[in-house]
Length: 112
Image (tube, rainbow, N blue to C red; front, side, top):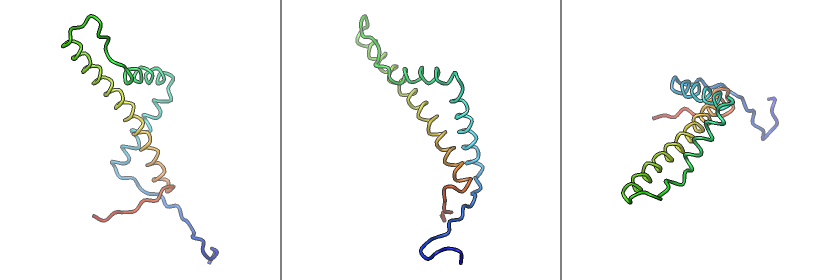
């Protein structure tokens, strides 16, 4: 035996990704490539500004107009936050799947 007592020999085995995982991986890697383009910083700043918008200026608005404007601002902010979060999650998932595919992260086949 070529291992010392108490040591486990770790073998890295590549894991073949399913079709769905392959699509997730490609999509995430494409988004990662987009985030590295010079224009991404500008796009991210715009979406971040929308996501953190404090809301409409109530001056000169009737109460019902202001309420509607607040609802629209909230929806825009929520959508911007969700967009940025989704991009980040898709890139993280692609990174994870890449590590699984290379055998750096062990996965177990689950019996259902």
